Length: 288
Picture 1 (cartoon, rainbow, N blue to C red):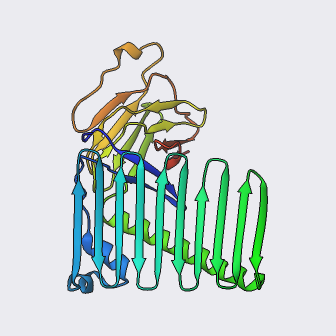
Picture 2 (picture 1 turned 90 degrees about the horizontal axis):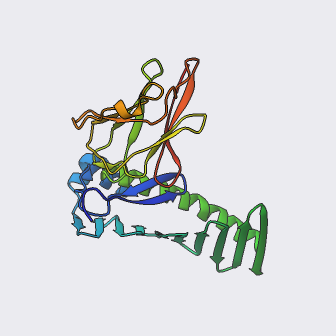
């Protein structure tokens, strides 16, 4: 695996974490990540004893920030991904593999596990007062309770869900601070020139393999294995009708690529969408 390979690890609740699994240096603001981890200011975290480690091999990646106030760890190996956020009184674990993602939150007197598959979401919440299991399949939802006090269990489970959501947001912020989330944006659509421009506004190189641009009429352009460096842009333009063979591609830092479809962008307004390798909208740009 080389710099042309990025393992995209999928959606974690409210956002997407895409991990450069190998061959790509992970850079970023460790102080900002530590501040998010511990709740300190950047300056205070600089003075805090800590261990920061990063290992990258041909097929795996790991990144850890460890302090007395909390530890965060990311691991990626081929198509397997795990993230762990440990605090003095709680633990969040996320494990993802093809077709399945399991999130487990453990706090004081409550454990919440959520397993997502393409067809089913299973939530199991355990407390000293009982266990509540909820299964969602399609539009149907079933719940099974065992214990003595269902109302108290439901209240504990509601609190655990909120804490899990907060921890996941914190993991996402830490990953962004460590430069682990591809940050691509559409900065311009020029309908008269039939071109759309994207930019890597993050701190890490993003491999564009598997990314697409689409319009509202389901026209789409798929990128090849192109490493887009931080602050670099990529222009995708569509030639005039029946002139696809004359389309030239530049290898300069300001890359250009040809879209084998003519007259893509409507003159009276439209929305361009940047789609990540999992088929999810990562960025949009609307013009009128």
